[in-house]
Length: 232
Figure (cartoon, rainbow, N blue to C red):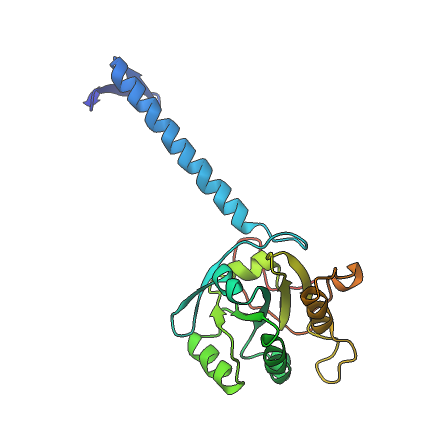
């Protein structure tokens, strides 16, 4: 039998038996247990909330990432400056993403003048920040390209390939997901451009245009339990 902080206890057949506990100590004990339980519940709920993917026509939650130089950017702060936002998943080592680099730079220049904010995100585990910085400078990207080191933002949007785009309106509602267009070489359908024009004009995007299949390389994710890099 031992005594510790007014608690008298002993072990019997692998069970902890508590006895002769003063009333004040009992109240204090259960108060502590309630606090611990509450903290645990809050933490679990937060983790669950973050792990869920955002759905089309839902409001996108704020997030913070750093660029290759260590500067922090938040979605909401950037979208205040230019309310319509394109979140663009990129890669430095993907030849398909490289094929789109010039097209992306042209879109950014054209729609930047129409109050559209582009945010690049790199979620590939093997691509270092120095590569991202060099890649952005090489292709003249005049928008922040941020590192997503644990794929949390890629998971949140459900991004699987590079390049892949996600369009948010001025209320940060998720309006379009998928490809920039229908061909890496000679496109005949310009999905992102069409969606942007509709959102800027304050019009609804037809259901058939809300989501298209992205063309590109798979995002190489950090390994997690039950998660791999395969794309159906």
